[in-house]
Image (cartoon, rainbow, N blue to C red; front, top):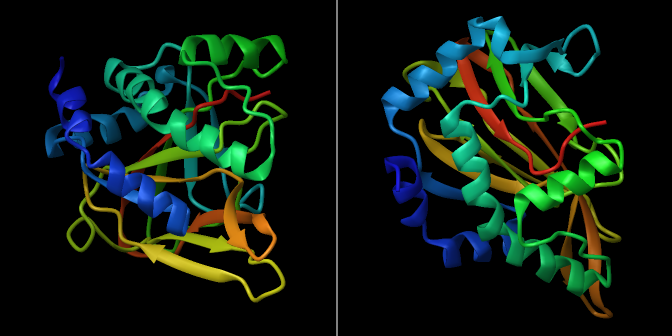
Length: 236
């Protein structure tokens, strides 16, 4: 087992599940070393690793830039994705059961990705993001088609307060018959944040209700902020 997978095995998954159920997002604790974080963020300037680059201002998504990896993923990115999937699968299935929704996800990530590709979602959705001073990310959902996994992960690659200021991870939950609720999380270097892709179940007087959720990033005030995004469905 690599050091990365050993660190992931040490995560308190009971606590992560509890926070996901309560808030729709959960910090994992450290899963990458500072050296690994620097290596991954350094890949941003190696265009051959990516299939496309998105300028957020051009598309009115905010300000900043991100790049989608090709399917030839670096080993650490592939290992993290494969290791997270089976640990998040029980949460995904539990949420689907509470909402009376289909739970199409097989035990194997490879099989799930084959299903995505058969449905026309065959492009890599793994993301490396870069923000500079004044950059931000509008509230959104990473939904690329009908094939959807309800959880995803972002990993902080720079040290808040040292490499950058601002740039908190934002989530807004649309509550049934009530005002929306927001949260802001400072993402430490090397730590992961598991969060809701689209919506999550919340308890109501009539059982369980569907609470839509969106995520984004607050304005970076200084420095440079990189993050790695792990998505468990591919894009159309």
